[in-house]
Length: 441
Ligand code: ARG
View 1: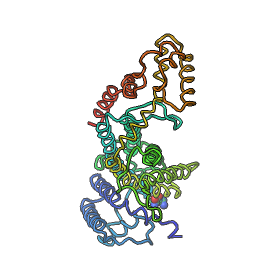
View 2: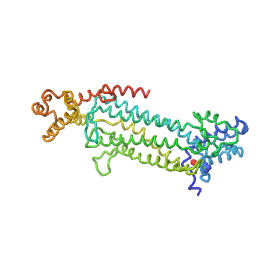
View 3: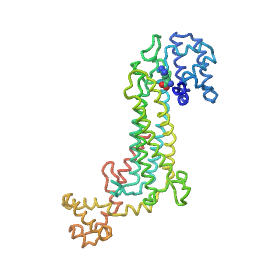
View 4: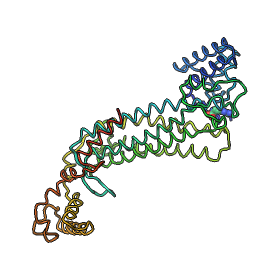
């Protein structure tokens, strides 16, 4: 029973947050004359000693004491005697564990946010580096229209911007101070919750003690932020994997981020991108798990809620590991300009522009769409590109096509024409990059 219910194996990592929270609590107790100043000093010193033990890995974790909170309290009384028992005055493990998780998550959110910012910077740097490179844009995974490679990369910049906004929301909800809620109803001791919040750098207090110990929204919000982020990264990984395949050959990932096959000498497997794509599964799993744990739980604390930790910690660990690797993988990849050039030279990609040209000659878009469709059908039959149709042949489709049309079929010109705000023209992308830089500074 003890081993089954213990959380110590994984909540150990809350030790430093637990100690920080306890020090703030005990100082508040003394400042409000709930315990004597000398007692508080003994306890604070004892806790500082325990912090050192945690930091140099000499803390004697003992599974007979269920969780990190009981372990630290037991160690405290070992070190300073029965006065250690005063630490828990006006407090329950229910508000204590909530406090610890809030403190912990707030810190980790800041770390993860800076990793996301770094990834955005990487994307922006690459977008600047590849400003003149074109790539086919796809819909339905069919070549659609040429776009700037920078434009494509920056798509992920904006996804990350929204991810960071969601993370900021999770931070706001983590920035509520639960201590003082006691087991659920508050405490009869004259505690000053604002003082504790001030000492620990919290922006706000929970206004309802039952809510304070029952709430896990901040964890769910973080997990849902993480799930969306992983969804984005998995799409990016999928593209990197495709682009680096023999069939596409648009990019090459650095050897550091690929592996060979133990059997097939020619293989260069994009393991890192694949595994990041794969990690998405467990992050979603963590979200579904905590949502399911919380569903239908009566107020207030229930032991079920101890299940809030492992998925959270696993997600945090994975994000902190994979975000820097992702940035490295992008920085070190090389692009195959020849292959990209060849791919965008496929002038079917400019069919829309040919149709637009006919619209400017007075045709309705439906009619011009039809005309160009017929031209492509003919080219398809003959195995040629649009630019290879003779002026005479073209004029059979529409008299206006008898003249020079090569400018309509030049991907560079086609891209240059898409000057609408947010479009793929170099001038519009430059504007986009300016806005993006501004956001990061
Ligand atoms: N280990 C517990 C958890 O993580 C701490 C809170 C326990 N509270 C209780 N009343 N048993 O949820």
